[in-house]
Length: 546
Image 1 (cartoon, helix red, strand yellow):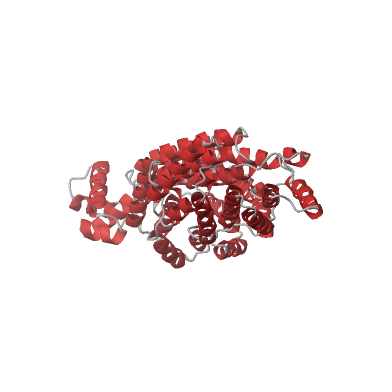
Image 2: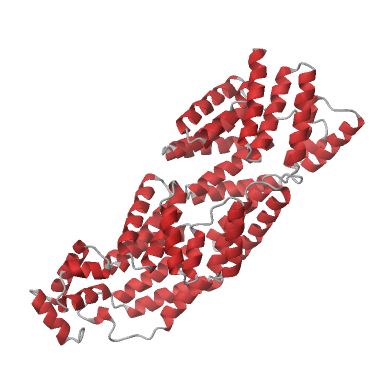
């Protein structure tokens, strides 16, 4: 339901501030007709004057009612509901949509507006977690759009169905609808105000699915779209937030900080929703750079604007050395409902915090859940996250050889996606594997590579970690040099020599009895020992115990 083309050049140029000024001047000279008031309301919305837009569309609705123009009144009521949806006032939006539906039903008017006024009802079903009910309504809306050949309504409904399908677990079908809708949007078949809604929603969905390639492609397209409209204010803040997130993933951290600050400032100035997301993006950057106070402030801002500060805040506590606080926070977040990419981000943080807490069994459960999510969602980034978690847990569990393959897999994916920070973090782990296997030269080479990358964008905490590893003097007594055993296997051997059973060893090392049995078998095999008594003698003979 796009606005009618203006006779003035500002609409064709999509200079919404100029369009708003021109129509406002005309309205001052002589009151505008309802249809022209709707155009003025749309221009006001796109120029960042959302409160005025609401008042203008309300005025258009009342004027149309006075004149008995029911269809026009319903159209204006939809725009009022649209503005309220943008302000996250779904109850009021539903009220306006209900009024419009009643008007059309009373006059028995069959028109495209019948589809538009159903949209708030579909969103209410989503808010009530009735996704099948929402899908039914979106399908009905799409049929109305097709019957009246209305590109705006068709694509709004298809995009809504795509989000519902993703929520129901049919990710491939949902993403296919996103791609179809974005073809229409980028081809200019959809009006500006509806295009902005679809751009922001689809990009958010891609980030939720950790589909970074699509998120970047559509963010680039959104940026071009915004740049082509000199008077556009709405959606620009959201675009800057997405750009900040993309820059961070690609290691362009100074640019990410700049765009994140611009995003938050733009959204705050227009009082648009999304300030919480922008603040969280800034907090993550500050945390990774080691700017702890700035990160703390940004997480607090995110929370004030309705964006949960975790798992980032839990990881900040970990970086600050507050391990108990980090553990308490992630334990609480782990039991909260979340799906897809959001759940995956929590699980990755949980693996890191659990491993620092030496809780390998909990880390393994989190890593296994992450692998299950990666198997269900076609996302390279998610597969890399799952491989990293699997490798990290195996390494902590004394299985360096088994850890190497998943870590190399994660590294290859992140290098292909041009994610240098994530690649450097996994390179540090590969170095730890090399050290556990006795390859000290290989370990140093991996850590030096990681350090070179991390210095490029001032990743303070990660750089401090790798610098500490590089500064460790090589020790001839390092456990892997004893009979080819790993450090965990040496720990197990010492406990065997102390007379402990497999069950007792498992309790002390916080690993399963089955894992202990595997370590014992490896020890016997590597050292060519026939029994626990022989293993005990070996441990005393080689100075592993006193």
